[in-house]
Length: 354
Image 1 (cartoon, rainbow, N blue to C red):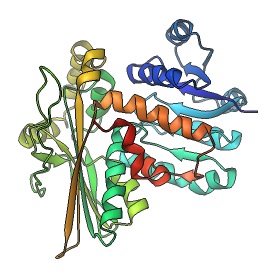
Image 2 (cartoon, rainbow, N blue to C red):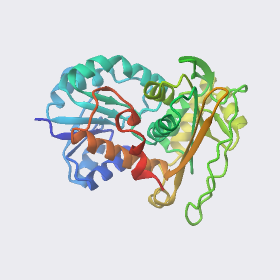
Image 3 (cartoon, rainbow, N blue to C red):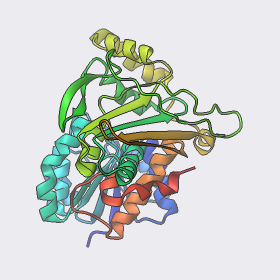
Image 4 (tube, one colour):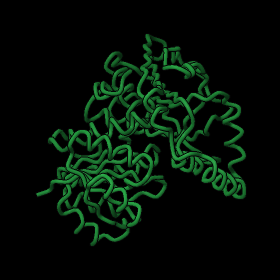
């Protein structure tokens, strides 16, 4: 009988944080990854079993999943969809969760919806701050204004990204993303010049000693957001925009334009690997805060907006991934493709509100 949570990519910064939160909840865990030394060392330190897996070997994957109930994939970036892994999880009747945040990955994963439903398996990307925070906001606003025709979502984080997040974002510089218009995905660029700028009221809550309030509210298109797929599927709102708060959308636009150059991409990759830290320190995670904002409106009619202050983004990710995994282990699942809010509703965000 399946009994373990297999946390794949556990030796990464975010993976280790999730492992610690799962341990605190007493979940039956096994660590997984590609690097035997790194995964083995972490597993020994945490007193957990481990398994070395390569996601390109279908037969080995199927065998390795025989005692697994939930596969949690932390091994991003997700630019290359793990088709063999997803198919193996469906075949072995193992629920699949991951930290993907890109709409292209979400759209790709929906093709397995019918097969997953037949197998009784749940496929859920976005089980971290991105996309869970905005996904819950979308569900909340849709409940409040069920006739909404437009939805705008945004998030604001304190501090910089981890090394892994920065490397993942680098892949999207200079590339086209999308917006949702009249139910269809239409091309859009990150912080494109003609975007309709909103000003989100993130507020200025007290966020702890020595920390800056969530002050800047200027928004720029987050044209790769999985919200474009997730929110559309569970709210049916036909026009959706996703944003990120940035000190200067013009600066973000500049990065996007220069991202076309392959040489510059390689240079930025080297700089990120050498300069960007693995992630926030423990005190930064404990005292930091993030915020998520949303607005829903009827074209020519009423509107509603809301803002939530949450735990720091990486702390949020570790908590919410553990919460979702625990619910899946308890049998609280909806088969097929799901997003955090489509399976668990806006109330999922409760444990990470601050």
